[in-house]
Length: 352
Ligand code: NAD
Ligand code: ZN
Image (cartoon, rainbow, N blue to C red; front, top):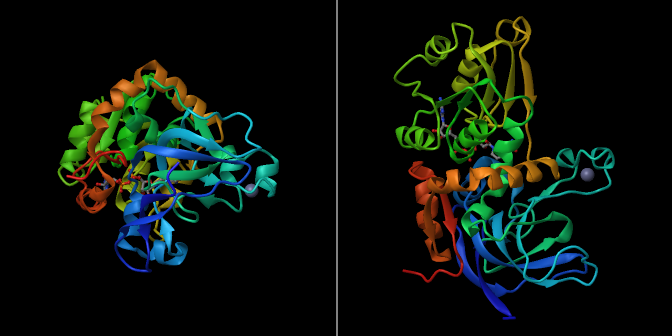
């Protein structure tokens, strides 16, 4: 085992991140050391890189960033029981406390004291990452590393989608960023009757189409509420999966939903926003559900099951870029421009 490794670190409270040489992390008795094979870039990494107001309040440099990971187990602590050297693994990124009331009743994703890999503790934009065994998920080895790596955001999409019925339902997905796009083949695999995808970005709409969306809406060009009604006999969709966090899109999604519809909200508005709660929610009996993280571990089982049922193959076009660690700045530019699906860093890839 080498003593030193390369890692992308946030060294200062300000924009940017640097490729550094640091010691390979030490593992405690209940930890697992993972040799990173693929680590995909999330919007959160971009927020930390660009040092937005959320990061300024939350992140305490120095920190190795990155949380979406797949790799091979190369060492285990002495109290590790179920994970073996050589396993192909990913990580649930929410490190829970096991002691709060929500953890006590098994609602781990709602833990009151969650810490997040690559946000609160050193993450995986590195050659190696240490992960508590309780956060390890063992993968099928025949799934490509890049697809194994995106299971964390795929779990966000899965959790949002699977909070209610999808079979034979009409579904609207607002926001086709990487997570919204993933919800398209999930809804299709789950047997949705119609999948409507909405985004202001044509590149992303095109990708949603390639992943199976039936109807595409660009709200800059047409009225989404009218388009949705025209495809649902005037009533609106049965299910909304809100994945944009954009206030206008959120208000339009509520108006596009039929009376009594389920609206699962994953997108995070950057500041407080206004809703016509009486007219759009209360009097129409909508069921709003906030979604955070992934259910531990129900969502991961759902992800595994759908990957095996063909979702792994359907998701391949979503991986648009694979770069070495040195490519982190290019990765962040792509994220900022929205001209990408999932961007994956591969620490074993040689720099150009
Ligand atoms: P993203 O920013 O890449 O995607 C958002 C998409 O919404 C973009 O493609 C953007 O073009 C689109 N959009 C913007 N304005 C729009 C409008 N008016 N109408 C339609 N689409 C519009 O983000 P992502 O990584 O795919 O994540 C989706 C959302 O989920 C983000 O808000 C993110 O912060 C949030 N998130 C929440 C959780 C959670 O646990 N709740 C976890 C991860 C991400
Ligand atoms: Zn807890």
